[in-house]
Image 1 (spheres, rainbow, N blue to C red):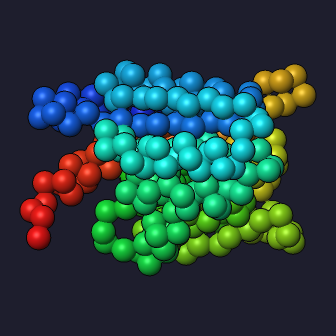
Image 2: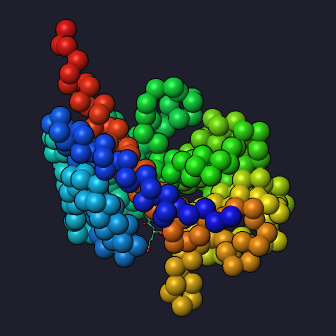
Image 3: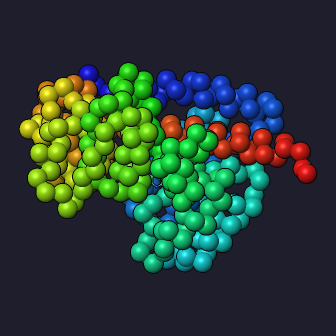
Length: 289
Ligand SMILES: Nc1nc(=O)c2c([nH]1)NC[C@@H]1CN(c3ccc(C(=O)N[C@@H](CCC(=O)O)C(=O)O)cc3)C=[N+]21
């Protein structure tokens, strides 16, 4: 079975578009600001895709592009401007940032109520505590959970193996799967005998940035394989971290690249923008004591 993230994303758009129209009729217009520093070509594509999707759904979208020499102080000031702007509900600073900027400092500068990526220590803490409050979660792993649920793949009691320990994907992915009742193994760059671990996975999540790291022989027959990779092969073609052409014959379910996880990331970003707009609206409606 192919897990078609593109089709699912387009399907979820229908409801989101209607919801945005309803909110606008009540005077609430969800608005997202994406800040991108520098000219990383991959980041340009992602940011363009986000903008296109927002426009399609009727979500207001502002892209703030800055040169690679934009300073940390200038970026903090730009974030503060949008923190103070009540018409803005979500702020996303595209990662990675140039080396001279401290990512942790930037993430902590974003108002937690506008942290649409769920990268703030507060939101990450809620995720790891399995809090029942509403809070944003990193869009890629959250989108993967939506996809699993849509395809009736229930992680409860399953062995989920994560390859890659990034803050954006691997770590929050493990937390979400744990919260859903999976037994979770984290593997990473220092893991010895990686294949021995991946072969025991009922659900295998691969997010390393190494093209075709995972081969058919590394996969348990019938497993669900989720490929978060966005790599270029020697011909410049977009490929994943999984050798899809051979892996698809072993896996029970697998995501393609492109058209798998990527579109779900963007759809989740839109869902969370709408959610933050609704929460902000409730907050302003609270009677002042
Ligand atoms: N603050 C922040 N939040 C992020 O969510 C974030 C980020 N920084 N930095 C980079 C990663 C990566 N990411 C993707 C978004 C869309 C596609 C996407 O649209 N993929 C398409 C095609 C892409 C192509 O054609 O190159 C697909 O898979 O079908 C991929 C990857 C968001 N990220």
